[in-house]
Image 1: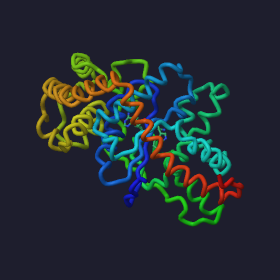
Image 2 (image 1 turned 180 degrees about the vertical axis):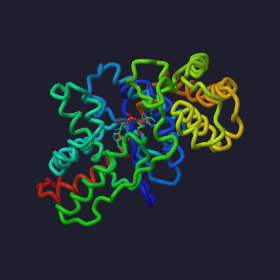
Image 3 (image 1 turned 90 degrees about the vertical axis):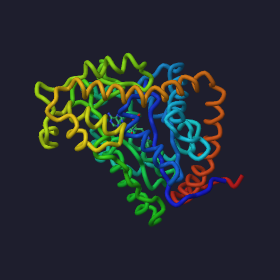
Length: 340
Ligand code: TYM
């Protein structure tokens, strides 16, 4: 039996490519910080990954790599439940019910679908369109109260809240699903591309120089920071002037995110200087913080049996909670359940 602490956290990461420092600062670092105070479920969302084409063999490796990244970043599999989404079938089953609760108009407003489907909407998978319903199912099946995510997931979280409210109202079960709170850190919830401070750092950006991956070697990190776009000025003295320089603001957010030092303090330290000292200090910090994570991920990836054991254990724990919610949902909706 899982010990139920007061509040429950669920979050997930797609196994759709190498994870970068945006995923780390925006999401995974918060998972680590929350794990002792909440009952935590950290999911590897393989069902979401296949909303766009994946190579099946690479998908399996990427799934293990996300599990390894969770553990290498400091998530303790003994306290938190780590599992892959497809191994707990209740996610997909609840998603179907949610497909019948969510209104088309709500999904039509989702900007991530528009971004991901691009100009060729007719050719996008229908899974990509209903993606937010599955995400709501991930959260609601554990009756999660808190969801740590990056800023790009904010709209999906708002939709989840609407879905929870509509379900509770439609099936006359007030408070059945708690209304989940997004946990989004103001400064590090949207880490931007190192090449263009107006674009989000993303796994799918064609340029490797736009992001720092958690599996990057130290010399690559140093090179990427050296090449990162800055500005034709010196480091401004005032935060309000920094905010006008997207690339500088982003590098300061990264520095602050990894060290916990307030941005204002960093500005005091580097104001009036060109960016070379700042960049060199930033790469030292990134190398120092990322190197242990990288080597732990690599070590864990050599021990696939251990990772599979963690996922199996996570599946058992998650399934227990998810099945209970699903049974209650089926009953509320009016489905006959066999007792066996
Ligand atoms: P995914 O796999 O795209 O990203 C994983 C997490 O990383 C955050 N993130 C960022 N944070 C800051 N700056 C960035 N540049 C950046 N890029 C990504 C994302 O916001 C996310 O928190 N739909 C989700 C996965 C998901 C999920 C869920 C999350 C599925 N079900 C239920 C929470 C709850 C996604 O595609 O994340």
